[in-house]
Image (cartoon, rainbow, N blue to C red; front, side):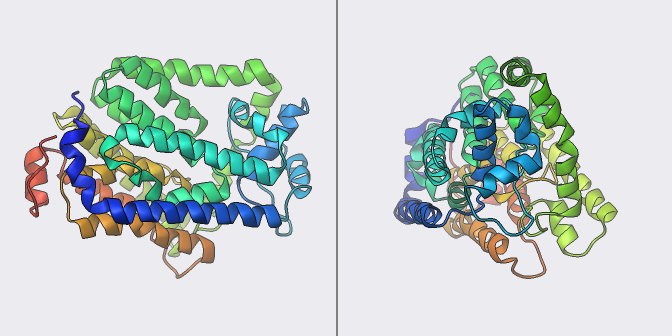
Amino acid sequence: MKAAPGPANADLFRPYLLVGHTLSLLIILLIFAEFAWNFADPSSRDFISFWGAAKLALAGTPELAYDSETLHALQLQAASFEPDTGLPFPYAPAFLLLVLPFAAFPFPIAMALWSLGTLAVYALVARRFAPQSRWLMVSFPPVFAIAALGQNGFVTAALFLGGLVLLQREKKFAAGLVLGCLIIKPQLALMLPFAMLAGREWRVIGGSIVSATAVLLVGVIVFGSATSFAWLRQMPLYVEIAKEGLVGWHKLVSVYAALRKAGLSDSVAFAVHCATAACAAALVSWVWRSNAQFNAKAAVLGAATMLASPYVYLYDALVLIPALVLLVQRQAPVAVVGALWLFPAVIIAQNAFNIGPVNLAPVLPVTLLVLCYFSSSRSSGRRFFATGKPNPA
């Protein structure tokens, strides 16, 4: 599984650098503006869920992080909320270890430190994944959404991309150890078994089992079995959120959510979603079983990941980075790549203002999956993108 050399691809990203780095700077400025607004008037951004849970853990009652009433009462002390709303804490107890240090700070400061720290980790890992891209990965619009909300999308993206970097470098057991940590957000790992089994990546599978098991055990050892049982008892809430659209069908970005927003019934929408996910899994299996280059395998895996679960949000969309990188490497038209790259800005507006009767979010992963599948070999890439010489990498 030979890595594509960065210098050979350097010129391919040149058409994007000026606009991309300008957009990166704009996103950073907007992020700091969001921090300033949150300092002036703390509001119910997603990080307050992590912060409140960490506060309870720091006080010696980590099991109460999964008690919605207790958690919400603590959140109300730090930020303004709409009536009768609260943000539950959905993650495995081991995740508390990541956010525990931030409980020592007031909520606005803690969120700014979390967002900036995890953004830096993501940016460094993304540059390792595609070194020739410089800092273009900061210009992807979901970066703004993740930082402004204080979500964990930078952490999961760093795990996903970092695991792929290690796998590309033939450090397979280590790659598995990193990818297995996605157990903290298992909906982003649903396509990994199809890829690894099809590719016969047994050492990756072994490493993933070790780290996923360790993450769960660490939660029990550090915070006690009562905390883990409290986490498990809360799981039906997220099934209900996904099934009933309690956060709004415009905020979830899955095929299922798009169809429910369009007025389809639960059973029909779920059936179509499952059929889409099954097709995505089949494409992942086919590409990872084939002799396609690694960058194509990673691209198909990333695009399919966003189609796997009914419960995904825009802040999970950084897993689409490998697909967008592949299009650049295969010399897709700049206008096409640019439009796909900026498409999440439309979704951000849709999420913020609930614009229109249609949830457009699944258009991006579906389009990227189709494009990356048809360009998953050098010959098909040459036929599909006829506007330039195929990249030899």
